Image 1 (spheres, rainbow, N blue to C red):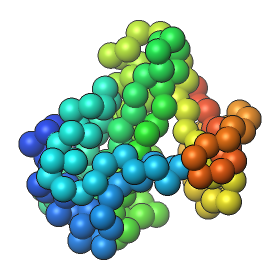
Image 2 (cartoon, helix red, strand yellow):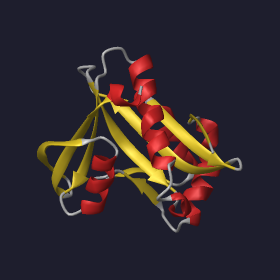
Image 3 (tube, rainbow, N blue to C red):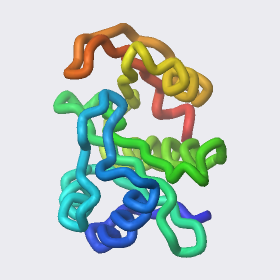
Length: 158
């Protein structure tokens, strides 16, 4: 398993990996489409994210994480965390979160917190993030309804 920064040139391989799962898009935790799986959609997402990492197994992408710092520079939001279903329940998700946190800490001075939102009706996703060091930090209304905000200190992954 190899984790590396996502690049625009990864678009076709990542598009193929996502589409093989039968998905047509990568969504964030609020079910908002982050990008479609066309090569152009993947390329655009990789370019737009300040922080993006890809996990490869046998030179094939099996996971992606995208994050973006907030304007105030003290926190960042995990916009997307996608892992191929065949690699769910492995360490791929954890490795992606760790790599994002380390990059945010080193490349964006002052970022102390990583945030993710999960729809209230998604207890499995909430439990996943809680098991990976995130704590509930309130709720908010989102496009898909009420969401739980979970945050974690970036330094726990350093």
